[in-house]
Length: 194
Image 1 (cartoon, rainbow, N blue to C red):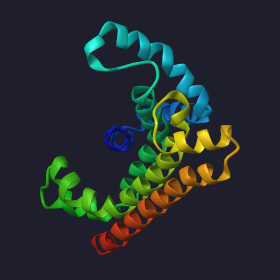
Image 2: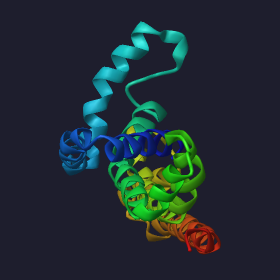
Image 3: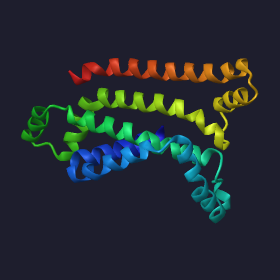
Image 4: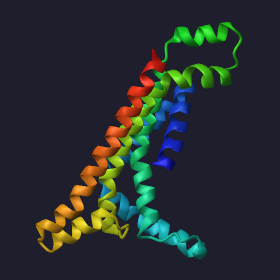
């Protein structure tokens, strides 16, 4: 989530500041989102294996953690970027105008006005992105990334319902916990927006 949050929020701010960026950014992210997860994992195997051969000490490989993190980051960009853009767009223009009127610089306006007012909506976008990433992380087990998805798929291949549940239940609980934490955080930040 960290790379997706950093990159997605930077893209969202860039799209907010420059409408021309938004014009090509969202069609590209929408196209990326339409690629099935298994296909994206498979598409990443060759380039990451090549990078791993170039830099053997990096630990990058065509299977395992590197393609899983890369694919999950790429899938998380659309909701994260969209959430950031929506958060900045809902900041009242009057608040920006007032800040400009008292002589605040663009950076001061962003840090002191836009960011605090956008934070609750930004957290809601982060919540959606996190819940989606937790669910997709299970699929990454198919390319050797491990995790609860490995238990789930082992259970499916062995036709063992108890093992499937052993993989599924922690994923569901983790998703519900992430959702609850972000809902609580958003409710705590709501007074800031008002």
